[in-house]
Every structure is written in structure tokens, then in C-alpha cells.
Amino acid sequence: MTNFLYINYPSWIHPVIFPNVPVLGLIRWYGLMYIFAFATAYFVLSKLRKEGALDTSNYKASEDDLFSFIAFGIVFLLIGARVFSTLVYDTSGDYWKKPWLIFWPFDSDGHFTGLAGMSYHGGFIGGLFGMILWCIIHKKPMWKWIDAMCVAIPLGYTFGRIGNFMNGELFGRITTAPWGIVFPYAQRFSASEPWVVEFAKKIGMEIPSNAITVNLPRHPSQLYEALFEGLFLWSVLWVLRKHKPFDGFLGACYTIGYGLVRFVIEYFREPDADLGFRLSKDGSEALYTNTSLLNISTGQILCFGMILFGIILMISLYFVSRKSKSKNQIKK
Image (cartoon, rainbow, N blue to C red; front, side, top):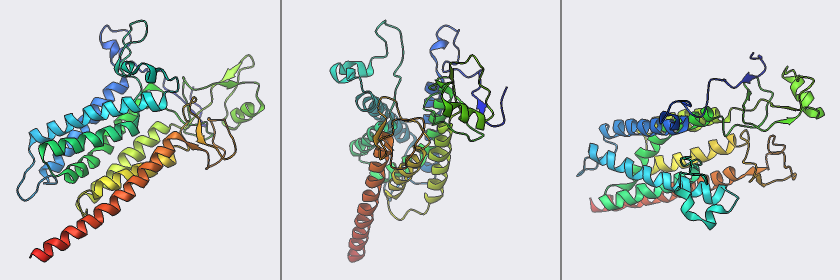
């Protein structure tokens, strides 16, 4: 029964969509959400093409260009996301010793597992490299295409985070907020700990007398990300798309905007247990709570790098555009 002071994770949601159906049992929510994400990104990009966002005075983007561009970007995005996840976030060292396992979709017993584990920041780097490479190969206006893709990405990204929620993963820190959710795979705490008893009392959670451990509600940080890194950021970029002062502006805005929003949300999201805080002012090791704003996670360090990169890119492109305009005026 749901208590008004917290929410139990829906029992009908499982990572596998059809758990008892042959073949279909391999389909997972997260993988399905990737399909929705790419389809949504294509829809937005197609809309921008029709608006002429990709055209120049002597070039008009075609439907084939879109398919080629997105396919190229997706391949490099997936490669970057997987490589970054295995080489940066995995602390076992196995992938450094056996790099062929990075794209090996089976476990040691030969069971199909898929490519579980993707890193957003790795996907960002890989996708950016893929877009740049495609534009160079096909001799297309690079910053126009990157701008358009950066407007399309956030709306699709919303589905990715919903997929994380459906998987019951990447949940946040414990909370007394009434929308806190008890995730089934979250770390459990000793029912005899005084702070656990006090926490449960605050949210009206009854701990059975024979309970050894208890699962406490957490921030649904996946939904925070879906809302702010997805819908909110997309809305801002969609409004800005017809007011950009120079090509590359929207790409820089996306990089800065995502970095800022994700940096803040990381305070609500629980870091990976094997990574913990990269910087900790008070030496805290309790990842399920954050006792200082100066306790910084790996994700926040990478987001700070995105913000810095976006600002440098914005300034650089601004001066390049001014220089280009000056030259054109002199010619006239």
C-alpha cells in the first residue's frame, strides 16, 4: 500500500519487457527507449531540415543526408558511450586487460547480456567526433548540422532516462520528500541503526519488528534528468533556434546547459559505489546522502569540463563570426 509520504516502486515494472516469452525476453526497456530516442531525434531534425536550418545559399539538405548523418552519429555515439563506460567507470580493470570484452555481449557462461553499461559523457564525445567526421567527409556546413543535432538530442534523451527508471537503476540519494520512491534494487540499511529508525519515522514508514534491513525511499533522479536535461533543455534550445547569432551557438548552448543542469542533479543522484566522491571536503563516504556541496562526483567533474568547453567554444565562435562578417563587409 502506498503511503502519502513516499511511493513504492511499481511492482509491475521489470527491466525485461516480456520475461517469460522466448526471443522477446531479450527485449529490455532501456534498449527500447534507445529506439524511441533515436526516432524522436530524427523527427526533430527532419522538422529543422524543412525549416531550412541546414541549408546554405548553394546547398539544400536532403532526406538522405539526414539518414546518413544520424546513422553515422549513432555508431560513434554508441562506441564512445561503451568505451567510456568500460574504461572510465568500471574499476575492475578487466576491460583494460581484455579490451575485446568491451563489445562482447555475452557473460563468462555464454549467456547473452547485451552491452549493459553506457556513459553519457562518452556518448557525447563519440557522437561529436562522428558528426564532425561526417561533415568533413561529405563537405557539409559543420556547425549548422551540429546546431540542429543539439536541438534534437535533448527530447530524445528524455526517453533514455525514462528507460533508466524502468530498469530501476541510477536512482538518487535517500529523501524524506513525499515523492521519494523505494527502489527494489537500492542499498538496504540496518533496521537497528538509530538514524534509520528516525528516518523511517519521519516518512511514516513502519519497520517490522523482525526486520533486519530496510529499504528507504530515494530521489527519482532519473525522472529529474528526463525533465530538466530532456524536456526543459530542449524547450530552451527550440526557442533559441531561430535567434542564434552565429552557427555553433546552439551547440555551445547545449553543452553549457546540459553541463549545468546535470551538475546540479548530481547532488540528488547517488554516485557509483565503486567510484564514490572524486573530491570530498568532509571525507564523507556515505554516498546515499551528501553532507556538503563540495563533495563532488565523477559526473560533476565531467560536467564541469563540458561547461568549460562550451564557454570556450561560444567565445571562439563569436570572434570567428565577427571576423568573418568584417571580411564580408570589406569585400562589399
